[in-house]
Structure formats: C-alpha cells, structure tokens
Amino acid sequence: MSALLEVSGVTKTFDGFRAIDDLSFSVNEPELRAIIGPNGAGKTTFMDLVTGKIRPDAGTICYGDLSRDLTKMSEAQIARAGIGRKFQKPTVFEDQTVEENLTMALAAPRAPFAVLFRRTDARVAARGAAARVGLEDRMQTPAGVLSHGQKQWLEIGMLLAQEPRLLLVDEPAAGMTSAERERTTEMLVEAAKTRAVVVIEHDMEFVRRLNCRVTVLHEGHALAEGSLDHVCADPRVIDVYLGRQEAADA
Ligand SMILES: Nc1ncnc2c1ncn2[C@@H]1O[C@H](COP(=O)(O)OP(=O)(O)OP(=O)(O)O)[C@@H](O)[C@H]1O
Image (cartoon, rainbow, N blue to C red):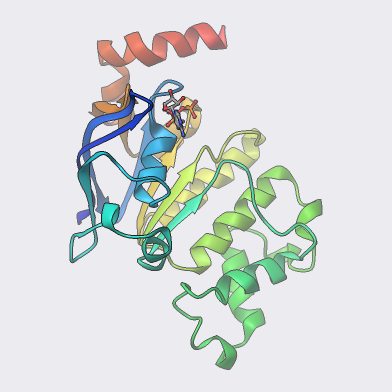
C-alpha cells in the first residue's frame, strides 16, 4: 500500500471566501476512504480540484508513480491518467440499454481496452462490467426505466469498465433504499480492493458499513482522520458535525 494521491497545502478561494483552506491529506492505493463533514465543508470542491474542474490558489495535488501534479494538468489529461468521478445524480443515457451504456464506456478513449475493443466480444465485456454492479440480468433494459439505485450502479459500472486507479464518488447513497445502500457498499468495498476509492457521504450508517478510514473536512481543512469510531469520539467532530446531524435527524 503506497500513497496514490497526496494533497499538500491546497487553498481555494471563491470571492475572498476560503472554501479549501491549507488542505493536506493522502490516499493510498488500494484504499477505500470516506470523506464526511458538514454542508459547505469543501468536500465537492476537493473533488473539483482533483479532477481539474477548478484550479487551486496554492498547493499541490500529486498523483501516481511519477507524482504528477494534477493542478498543472487539464481535465482530459487527469481523466486519461485514470481518475474517474461519479457525480451525485446519475448521468446515464436513459434511451440506451444497460448494454449500450456499458459498451459506450468500454469504447471510451480512456478505457484501457479501447484499442483492443474491436477484436473482443463487446457483449462479453459489457456483461462482465454489468456483473460487477449486479445488472447482468438487465442488459436489454433501457437505462431510463431502471430504479434510481440501479442507475447509480450502472454509472459506477461504466466508470469501473474504464478501470480507474482512483474513483471519486459523491454521495452514492442519496435517494437509495436501504437494500440498495447495502448493495452499494459491497460494490465500493469490492472496487477498492484493486484501486483507490474516495466516497463523500453524509449517511453515517453507510459510512459505517464501508468500514474504512474516514477524513472529516471542516471549513476546507482536514479536522480529523481515522476509523469512524475514532473520529466520532473526537469532541471537535461532535461539535461541528455530529451534534448538528443529530439535531437534523431529530
Ligand atoms: N463556484 C463557487 N463559487 C462560489 N462559492 C463556491 C463555489 N463552489 C463552492 N463554493 C462555496 O464553497 C464552500 C464549499 O462548498 P462545497 O460544495 O465544496 O461543500 P460540501 O462540503 O460539498 O457541501 P455539501 O455537503 O453541502 O455538498 C461553500 O460555502 C460553497 O458555497
């Protein structure tokens, strides 16, 4: 296990407001990491910075064996370097079947099999990708008629088909049934056996099931890090996040 992503002293200001404030932490490969924290803590901004959607004012985000600084790379270069991102809302092609969606993902330029793809059996490859997210019985179903959870899984399957080294997943459990949430944790745990997977999530039951290291963000910096039990026992975390969550849940 070694560091795949090293965030050092990153700051991002929007109109004078420090959304990310001297943020430093690292993610190993392979590893499953959860990022939690109150609304506005900077979680989504962190993902925007890693994927090159926005640039920091200061700091570096080093990635991979050559420690390339992602802050100097374009979004396309970062995607090609093996970083995949799942946004909160599913963005699948609703008119296309599960098989067609997965086939498109397999044929994408950054997919490792894209060059070989014409020589392989597209159906077998797509079925393999579907099996990773439990959709192998839905190959001919238009994505638009899948449940919300199944659409999320399809998109995770499309990303996994491209074999990212680092997969960023923003609130996958939102809007899912408890059975879907449980299945999703299994998928992410499995995916993180061979890559780094970073999950932003508010649902603490979901985070508990991920059973992984947790980083708590607050006001743009890492407030605490460790097991869920460790960070949940931290008075600062209780003060800025868990106390408020309990109040919101009440
Ligand atoms: N493009 C932007 N312009 C101005 N302010 C922004 C921009 N993007 C984010 N912010 C601000 O930066 C702060 C961090 O936002 P961010 O979305 O990263 O938080 P978050 O931890 O993901 O919150 P949530 O849990 O609600 O999704 C917020 O105060 C937000 O309003």
